Image: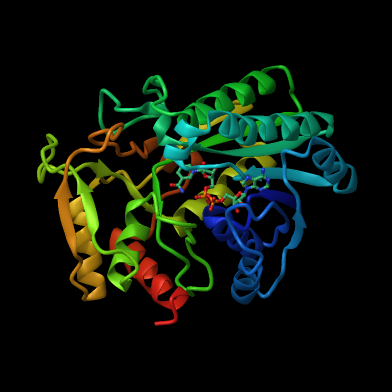
Length: 340
Ligand SMILES: NC(=O)c1ccc[n+]([C@@H]2O[C@H](COP(=O)([O-])OP(=O)(O)OC[C@H]3O[C@@H](n4cnc5c(N)ncnc54)[C@H](O)[C@@H]3O)[C@@H](O)[C@H]2O)c1
């Protein structure tokens, strides 16, 4: 089976994708610098799949290190590139850190892939590229809007870099996957999301509040033009998302792609408000969540959910798990991590 490099493979989405790749028989090599993850994640992957992936601890900002990796692993057939810094607020304070880690590393990897006789590349992009879309649900043809943050900009620039490179590199095929809001954990609770510090995302904030780590959840604004006044997002179970990576990779490896650079939205197609997510959590956990409504948060868009037609029909993938499944697994994971 093909050897696949997964950068950031010990992170939240990366670890779940490594599990699905190994379940499909791929040989996985992980690069991670552990800047936002832990080596223990390897144990979780091994417990689920019965196989320990090869792990190379490497900071992808180390250009010579990236070159040395590809010299050693010149039989890599595909790369799924998750490694990046992802805290939107931090990116506003430290833009150069984000441009270096999210753009510099991408360039180093693409330079190496250009040298291979053929290569398939999957890029972690984001629905942030659409900003507040004019039409909902959001199709892949919706215009890319001015990024709200340096983090969002790195995804837009990253996509442009890949597109430009593919244009002049017939041996390179790439897919940018635009994720909506990944949530949940593997049902085995061997792996899940491990935010360092105060969670930036809603679901880990909810579970940490319910377990007693946070005082209460702040809901930013209930006066948006939505049915209950809170913001609407498309929450996708991380296991469904992980499976989409395997499908996208296979599309490229099998030469089923229509162009050598493609984009797909990955979401459920269903928007859920913040309060609906809270209700889903309370329903599946049996816990009452402490929350308060506060003012709007700068930079939040009102509503975003995916048009899934292209992913369903062209990629041949669709979600199987629900928001309740995601909240249940996220809660079970939180309890396991805290020893409860
Ligand atoms: N989680 C989300 O809500 C979301 C949404 C849209 C897009 N994305 C993108 O998906 C990708 C994965 O996100 P995630 O939530 O799993 O994040 P994560 O932080 O859990 O995983 C990223 C992993 O990359 C590693 N890493 C970072 N910089 C590195 C470097 N220079 N060298 C080697 N390893 C490095 C980290 O240690 C971490 O294990 C990122 O590119 C992110 O921007 C995430």
